[in-house]
Amino acid sequence: MNQKQLDRMQKEPGFIAALDQSGGSTPKALKAYGIPKTRYRNDDQMFDLVHEMRTRIMTSPSFTSDKILAAILFENTMDRKVEDKYTADYLWDVKGIIPILKVDKGLAEEKDGVQMMKPMPQLDDLLKRAAKRHIFGTKMRSVIHSANKAGIKAIVDQQFDIAKRIIAAGFVPIIEPEVDIHAEDKAEAEQLLHAEFKSHLAALEDGDKVMFKVTIPTEAGLYSDIMKDKHVVRVVALSGGYTRKDACAKLAQNPGLIASFSRALTEGLTCRMNDKDFNYMLADSIDKIYQASIK
Image 1 (tube, helix red, strand yellow):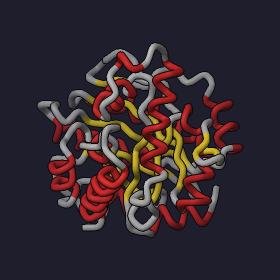
Image 2 (cartoon, rainbow, N blue to C red):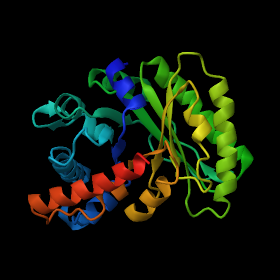
Image 3 (cartoon, rainbow, N blue to C red):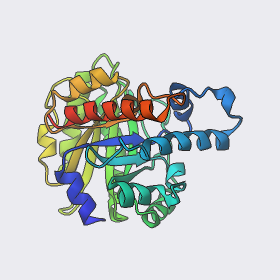
Image 4 (tube, rainbow, N blue to C red):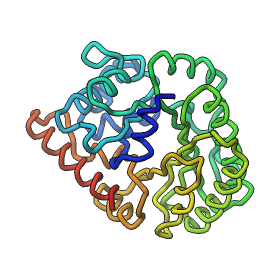
């Protein structure tokens, strides 16, 4: 673990840029960017195009460590280069931004109101590669659709079981059990999730460090006590389908909670923009998200 990166993540103001769209979500990201499916014939071409989009974002003069703490990368992005450096090295060496890797392989079918993560049989090998690529931490996502106590317990059990393996490999895991913003019993689901967080944190070893990525809670300040736990480096929030305006407004009601936005970060950016307009809009997005993250 890089101590300088850990200190930055724990103490400095800013937010996390989520640039980790995978195979399933990349077509949506490209479409929003102005690139329809007719522009590519296979996955290789698709990933080439999305890497071009991410490179444009990361190399923008608006994308700096002044307001961005870290960036979450997809595995394919980790293995590619930006300006002749592997992406994680470019982020840290050139930009001073901490590199984090998405490690989950997608979602299983819904059961007991939740979608667990699919098996990750190659996790150990992936973590070895991540160490060589100078990755600081990892992120893994599952989804809660309703306030089913058994389902929520199972989802947090799975997240922490894998998190312990990631900690043992020398990384800081981001635990992300997203609560669907459209769930009718969202607030109740978040209360159950909070209780599971507390229980699992109490069982960690003294030196274990984790982060949480959560849906912005219905009850403002719900995770404030979690932020104070000795094991917790940071609690961050996903935009979850909210517009940037709504996500920032809700985030600002939760002191200490910082953004880890994807769609809300890139909202409005298109491939047709000239660099001046692109950089201006990206700078405006970054500033709005930053301001909501430091309130």
